[in-house]
Length: 182
Image 1 (cartoon, helix red, strand yellow):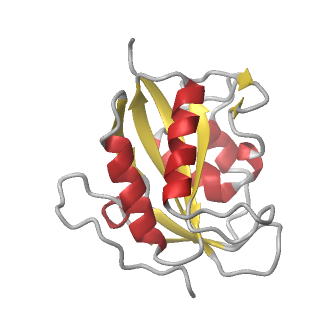
Image 2: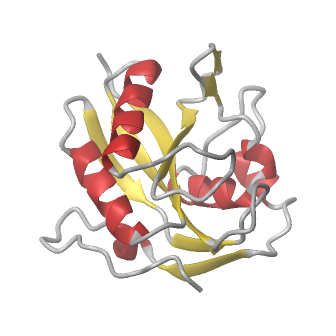
């Protein structure tokens, strides 16, 4: 199978979120049929919807994937469980959120997975890091995500660190240091 490019969004606002990102990315990079290509900068973002809660940290990772989309989704969900993700409340606080945002310009709609991710074009916290790691990515109808990003407001989204803060595959120290508290 030829590797397909895919982008996964990372988010969280409970505990040491950067450490959770790094563990997830190390696990993804060690998964057969998955390779980390590049990682976005780290964003601090105001929560959108849901209860009152701490700000989120967000990033995205570009992967080369030799799995089917639903197989990668299962890997992502297992990593969320390993990070003690609790799905108690929609849009609620979480230790780790891994969303399959985009898959090689492919559109897919099943009961388990929709690609591109629903709402992607309205959510700067997801779209900005996607455009950083996959600047030429297109929507299912051929529009440029980079062009769509230019139309979104930037309030509530702040770059707080470069890609190496999120994950450095050459580093032996991918422990965390950035809590989500502001």
